[in-house]
Amino acid sequence: MSGDAEGATSPQVKFIRDSAAEADFFGRPDRVGSHDRVAKACASVISTNDDLKVIGLLGPWGSGKSTVVRLIQRELKADETLQTHVFCYDAWLHQSDPPRRAFLETLLQFLIDHDLTTQDRWQTQLDILNRQIEDTTTTATPSLTAAGRLLLLSLVCLPFGMQFIGHDWFEAAFKANSVGFAKYGFWFGLSLLVVPPFLALLTYLWWRPRWNPLSPEFRSWDNWRTHKPPHQDESLLSIFVNK
Image (cartoon, rainbow, N blue to C red; front, side, top):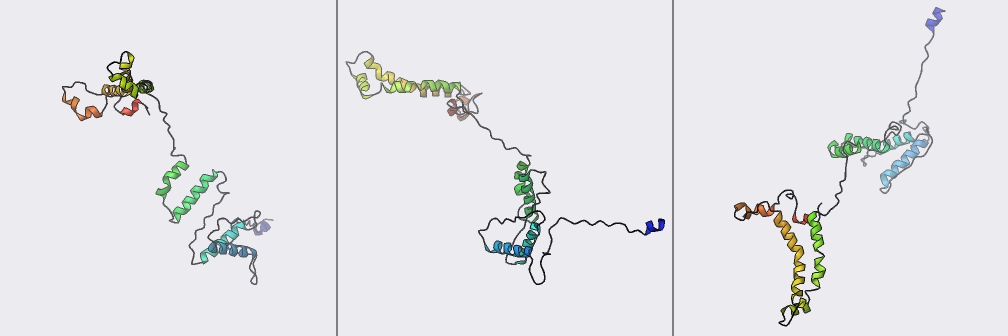
């Protein structure tokens, strides 16, 4: 028993790799195989038709689609007039990864390996894709300041003032026999029109850092160009709309 056990042959296990074949095993010396015919046809269309965008290979699992792709790659490389790059993406290998991100990362690495692009050029986009950089959008809603509200209210004076500066009111203001409101209506309307710019001028003067007319700083350009806190970062237009 011990001798038979020692002389027994150990079982050998052979594994078949699930990879594309390098040659069409369905062909014969006197006939080109079906996979070769499909590959040659696809390679011919790719090399001669510039308008071609997509070629679909449909077939069940194990029918030889990957082998046809490998044969197409061989045919394209054999054509010295073409410069082609074949990128193969294994969806099974990345089936647990986000599909769009995994595809783009694999494609980018392929382009970098073949010196078709650089890592630095796409690093920012990759960081955004991997959510290492967040792109945020800030929306500022305009709001009226206190001075802006006052000036907005003063604009109500404009339509009333326009009613008293016409030709008739102007003549009545300078006639010797004009009496009552007719004599002063034109000046009243003109004063109403001056209210908004007058308030804007007062606001501008109120923002001056220095008020002493005798000091050299009061007459300096910086005193009229900058504003006192908390308005130092604001412009005169910000009294209307504060952004």
